[in-house]
Image 1 (spheres, rainbow, N blue to C red):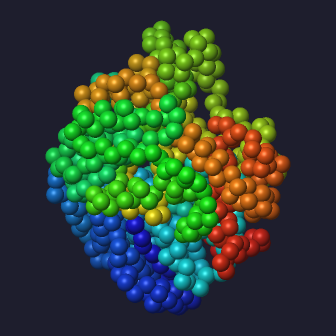
Image 2: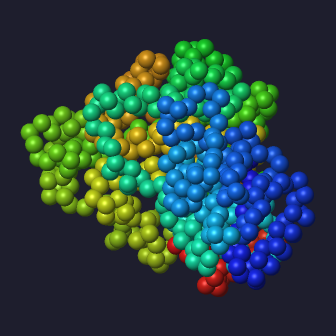
Length: 620
């Protein structure tokens, strides 16, 4: 687990300096095994002793800051096995003067960085765009405390936290919705690519790594050039990460993306020992073992097959043993019954990380929408040779040609705004209507990218990429922490620069990626159109946990706090109505949010209903 705590304050403020000294003293007394990574005026950085192999400490010259994690050069041509980052005074000065932008433009990887200047009166905290190391922040009496795990600061004398009903409502609406607000009013999250800038008594949180800017720079429309670049960048990113590990457990789902990662692993100049694992779901369409076997056989690696959930698995009171967190997590809740056997495999193999193919759907563009044709018209105008884009859009979206042409006319020729019509929609599943009305404007997608004049398909692309970058957080209790090599900055930026109609050229989802990796992925996987899902396994798990879920929800905090409606939930959790695909994910979010709330309202912790004082949270 990647665990750290930063204490930052204005060194010219005596009261803040006194509070900081007190907090640091208490923290060090409660955590004697933690080490000091940086001590300077206005800043103290402490690290847990059990950091992962990919969590190194890189101090900057003249105590100008520290970078925690793993770094590679943005200029991929500079990388070779054994490469290590070198920092000089000039780099540190440029990083500070640019508020961290020079760091983002020079290095990529998975990291959290702290930059400090002006004798402790100016600080910048940067979370890299992969989002694979968490970063949360709170403000207490002039001292900013930043951390990955909130349990690590449980020893500090902080006032009680307050529930954020609107943040929980947004989570139930969509557990993958990126939001800086956590479920606690005093705690904010730095999203992937964010910077928290602290200058004396002012605080600003903003996107340092901006996908809108990236989309508009260096567009790569030519299919041949885009395909060559995609193949090269994915291979180099996978090779970079492969050089950091000796033993990897790779989750081989049977889908395209995890097969691409495995194929590139086998072509890496540094080849760690790789064992694959397939956790199959129930249902014929969800069982992808046949495809996983093909990929493992072609790569000549061992494949271990396990059901996603063991026989008799159910949700129960053990979920309350999970550590508290600033926000709920569906993944943590529903991975817990599967962890013991997966951990046993990882321990036996002494795996240092569990790799996945997560992110491929989002980057390579798995989409059922016809926005590629709309984007082509927006980029090139209503010219005669846009017909191949219309044909491709009709094929991959499975829409009739007349519908595609209608969308092209509406959003391409007449430039009507494309968005999900939420303003007049009824409250989604389970949310209280009055609470829904208070958050409806918060959940509209694409506002920033639409304002920047990006095409509608690229707006959608940015939205789904933002979801995956901010989705994955460490799973408590996982022996070999998950790593997602496709969520690498050079690859993310490349895919954002490729137009949607180029990514989908040929009329298939992820079409460019299928072509680029046709020689290192079994042809049966390249050509398959269906995609497995864990929905059936989740539905069964919820059904087999009916009594626990009923007791949890019907007498729970979500209903008591008027976040969800009892009448809407009761048919599913008390009267046995089958859970369909439309109600499944909001119901899973309700279960995760309820467990999260219970953990904060028991065992001596409480949530106040009154708003926090104005100074309690960092301003944006």
